[in-house]
Amino acid sequence: MTKIAPSILSADFAKLGQEIKEVESGGAEYIHVDVMDGHFVPNITIGPLIVDAIKPVTNLPLDVHLMIENPDSYIEAFASAGASIISVHQEASVHLHRTIQLIKSTGVKAGVVINPATPVEMIRDILPDVDLVLIMTVNPGFGGQSFIHNTLGKIEQVAKWREELSLNFEIEVDGGVNMKTAKLCTDAGADVLVAGSAVFNQEDRKQAIQDILEATK
Ligand SMILES: O=C(CO)[C@H](O)[C@H](O)COP(=O)(O)O
Ligand SMILES: [Fe+2]
Image 1 (tube, protein in one colour):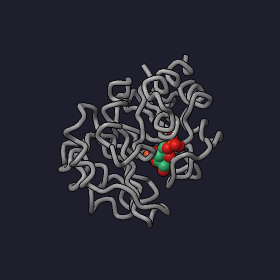
Image 2: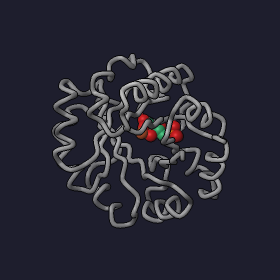
Image 3: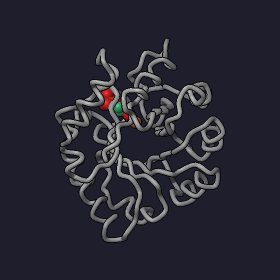
Image 4: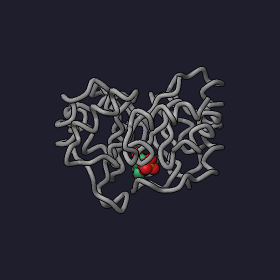
């Protein structure tokens, strides 16, 4: 069953709690939280304070996507604030294995992320250690960008490795996912679809989530 993880990057921050409740009752399965530091990506967004504030308003897992330099320095803070899954970029992690173990030591699920230009082989050796693989389908930094189609082969390769190695991490895709691109992702092997603008830019969020799910059938 495909899961939808609405990215609150495109929500109305003046009424964030209400926005989250709306997508929760609309069928979302994760709340995707985009953390940007203005260094790893050219934008600044959310810190642990916001994770802490939204934790009590939802029963859904908080899927925290760290787009930051030195992720090791902030893992404890995001775990304490209430993250359920913390994902770090391969490109931002000098010692990726250590970082993944650090996330797990806090009791939180660990994910690894790769950018569109990063060869999928870069995460091959860490697969047995992760709970989630996030394939970026846009360059990280902003919501509302267009889907990069040549990332689909990476989803297929990760799904193939998962089967060959009998692993059971989830495969998530992030960026430019909408009614047109969702099926491409699930056909390639994605289990979790992050959708920001495709959900929060619609008046009826429940309908938007159902439309994306329907498009994958
Ligand atoms: O990580 C991200 C950007 O770096 C966001 O999760 C992503 O862009 C979601 O927004 P949209 O669905 O509008 O593309
Ligand atoms: Fe994201």
